Image (tube, rainbow over all chains, first blue to last red):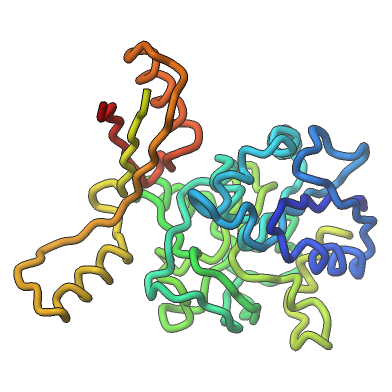
Length: 220
Length: 80
């Protein structure tokens, strides 16, 4: 499996993501945001966490319009799997590859801690090795992870089984996201955006391995 | 020509920052503050001198980058 990890100025989880993908058996290329194409033969694109372009204007807004994103969009629309983690999720939403918006956390604070989650859908290339309803723990670290969408979009996400991950109830919800949403899928189920960091929970030395199954599923 | 773009959250979209400001104003003793909405202002200096063309250009900038059309509205003014 060949993966491309996109690097923007201000990305800071790009190497963590590459390490997690390599541990799962992937070959990984780092791709600079000014590149206009992806390397040949890519099977997966990862958009990492961080603070691309300093979160200026809106989180992910400027990265979503970077030159490489046209190639990422074409890859996704052609059925290629794309995962966006944290700032990567914000970028995918700003790029229009996922619906809704991510707003300032309801508590207004930057939240950096482990959270309990439930796998809401195992019907995707990312969550296939989890069981639906499985409780997992992953770290979050964000200021703008409060997922909002209009009633129609939420109904569609629920009806099409496109909510991939939920915080495990309102008490575990760190940011006020509607319906405790932590991660969503695109209509073709090939694009996943999520606020928690599976790449920070893919090695026992880092305090958890609940994120490992996601990378294992992609590399399988 | 200078354009001034005011970007606000759409009505009905919860604004946690505006709410925090409202609470802070109340704690300072300002009474009767019923709602606070926080937005942003962007000033753009344009080479374009035709007002209609400038309006169309800034409108396109708002649609494509300056505003998140899912949650934000915008107003374009030419103050000079």
